[in-house]
Length: 463
Length: 133
Image (cartoon, rainbow over all chains, first blue to last red):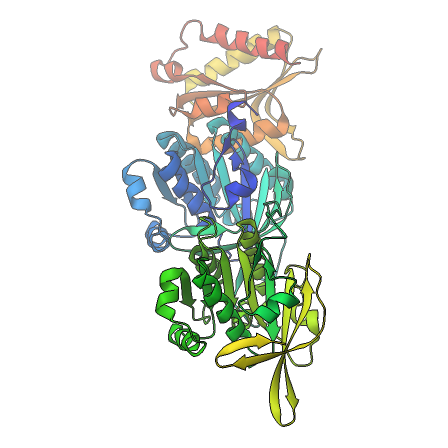
């Protein structure tokens, strides 16, 4: 491969470049997956950003979709290919239903002629499957791929070819492609019995680059078109912890149980059954810290904003005053919420990257758990890791079933959070009594005893 | 193929043979894949065993690129393509994979072999055979 062709080019796909640096010129990469897995969008984004951001002309050869359909669909995802075409930065070639023996010659003609016409640096063949179907043997397919690779190198372009995997199967085309191409990216759409569908990108091969991790979540939708999530994956698990820098919970007795409050930049889970006081505790914490000038973000998936305001008033606080001082409240309907939206809502609301929020509280996570199904733990994990990295102190409330014990309630998350505060409800002498126990407090000495949690004159007290 | 091109080919075959090279008409080479690739001429130096594949195409266009490159890469044998007409740009792509394209445009149009073409082709073929490492 020539020196020119070893140049690394950014794909423009958010997340992909951060993970892999881009793709090498002169390389041919296969994007494979079941129908509906996002192959076309992935490839379109690669061309779109190449033309728009890097002024690199792109050629799209489609055997599956008309130009009108493609343009309309991509417009809906925030990609305007018509304007790129007017600037001679993009060409779309329809090669629909290539069923004749001339298909290979047509591909040859359209690919090379059009690529030279616009000086294409990025090329997509979507999909190669109908053409391969006309190629009788594995040997012939290998020869075809080698020829395509030679063209790729000669043009100094990056070529993505898509391959269809039948639903229910995981094989990559006919077995020869995985050896011939320079990279294999497999896209999957998992639809669990319960919860939101999950999109996964697997990078099985990328010549010239070590692959440190095989699975990445991604989402499709405007305005980005497609976005790969890296949260909590590649970045080092580092945070600046100062054991002496602690945040008060706003409840003196609870601070004592925690060895003087919550260490800043750590993550805390507040667990308990319904009615045990999780929201009251978190709102007290939010209000007291906002009153002290902390920038507090309170995200709830269970209660409308008005109800949160009413509860704050019940606890003796003035919501308007707290908002002025730095409390931000966001009430989100968890129904139909995708993983992408969750990341957007929490991260942007908390402004993690800008560092404007110092305390992030997420209440009602169990509601989201139902919507996300199996993807829930990873999403929460990523969010907490990002928050820690940004120096944000995080609090999560989680429902604990009465029969679950301590850390069992936060299985999978128990290694992630630094502190677990468990709230309980106990019936005693005909009345319901709330209790609190600090189950875990990393880097602190805790008594491990159970104390009563009382609501006195609108204030929570421990002891 | 026009009569004048056929005449040129025959004269070249004669010259190759006079140089001690073995020429097979409509022969095939087996590629590394095991596939057989057919050519109009296969010229072989019997002493070194080195070969050159020659194809004659009336109009060489972009539609031939994949097939020619696939053949070239699979046989790993130098390939010379004679064409009466060559679509602009095709030669550039083939040249990168060491496929030599020789225009017979003048032969087809004028009906006679331009002076020096026969010598040039012969010289190029001998050079390739001598230059195969």
